[in-house]
Picture 1 (cartoon, rainbow, N blue to C red):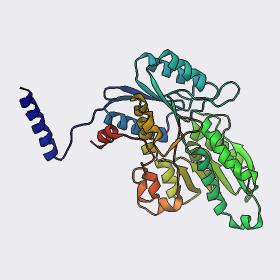
Picture 2: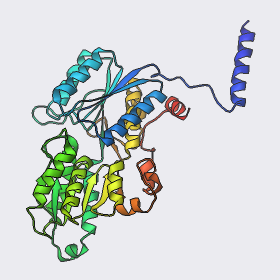
Picture 3: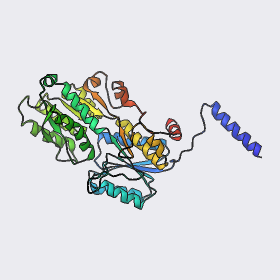
Picture 4: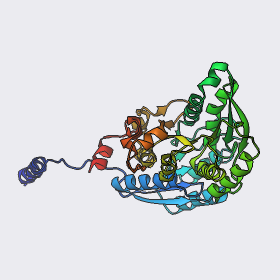
Length: 372
């Protein structure tokens, strides 16, 4: 009987090889349930994140849900607690407040020790502002300081005569400090240029209504821009593309030719850039891939394969369990060089780094599942 079973298995394996495939590798996360929980309200880039996260989770045999929390601390906390109570196996939680995330998530994991959590744009600090970590929790970020810096470089390139005269470029900055950690990290890259006198910030502005950021930012930007005489504002630097869309609409309403740059990208941003007017560049990561990156990390946490996470080029030993997504610049010239460019075909005109996946962690069973 044993010989017959062995022979049957051999025949099955041989048939699989002849068919050009191999037996499916064991998948330790198949049948698990995960969720993406976002502190902020839904927006184009975070919808792309959700779609990418969900698509990857389903390819790995998991069930996935998405929850947006409308910029509410309590909703974010309650949703995490409810998912933990409902038996989710893994959570990707995004944009938790620096003043409560470390303590709150530590308490959640103490209560639900089998739950796995990965975070995005969420720093861990205690009440004394000391940087902290949580065992088993990987923190994911964009290269925020770099995103800010390359946008300042784009602005500086517009005014070479000021560099020759060692005069600062005058910038109106769209920024909210102490709002979310990503904006604070971007401020670090921006301030490097202030410190050496290459730029001077005329003033900061931000939306007054975070549930309607585009229309609110349009109203705020129009009022602020109108305070200045022509030629006093050299450029507008925007920390976030939803805010930038409001700024762009204000500039068009005012008939102004002030150039602007922004962080992040979506189809509407590309459409505005393609009009050939004010919007000159976006510094971004690939939001169609970011959810995949986060889902891979969370899945490897759930499988206990932290060595595979640490092997990725995007992993940093300091401050510990920390990963950053590489960024690229997409220029107005690139967008206008193609036909009907959208996020889906942006790779046709963007640099090769835009679609690179080499920075993502993986392993044999994950590669097998994602290639099926």
